[in-house]
Length: 296
Image (tube, rainbow, N blue to C red; front, side, top):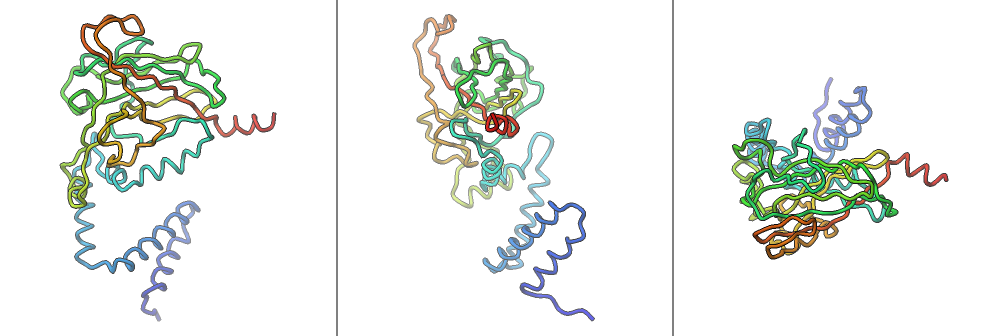
């Protein structure tokens, strides 16, 4: 004979239904998810209208997603879940460059550029010379680190959003023996996240805007160090305090300095104004490396 389930008894029964799962992580995650979902529904006294509105929202988010657009990742971004996950997965030692959200426009296999090369490949925008070093937390330069870079153009578009011939504003390069890297790009600008789908509807309903502050994406890897995924944001941007994906951290804000036409610091001659950015990227050691350092 079965008994009617309601209240906490219903929640306990649903949690128990996952007890036979072979994966302990799955059991733990699903138990917590069920308890929080049920508590949420009870806290807001979720109505059937609310429930079906939410189901419709999620259905449309799935329908608009594709190989080049992931509406659920965008939803996680605007709810701050992506940043929570980044923070949980990157508890870094003092001095290491802060990590932030990956963003949707990374593409594997970006072209290789040499130090001093131009990754813009004809993309519109004010020329920008980016220089920095890749360092360990103790200040030791990291030679031959892989630095991957991507960004938007002056119109706020990434190359994957346009019909262009070949990659633009993306590339990878290696640090020299002293950990230095330098390349030419274009000055980044603020741009909107895709807001023509369900997530855009949510932002408008909440009175929030879609604009991300100007930034350049970096991903840096080197043997013995944790991978760094971060952005460098432009100081003074109007949207630094309004980033819809909550990716801005004060330590990642840097100055893009404008210069008159003439000879750039690397010797390149320019007949138009240009900008420079200088920023060092500091990598944390891998956990095994930390243990070795402690033991020595």
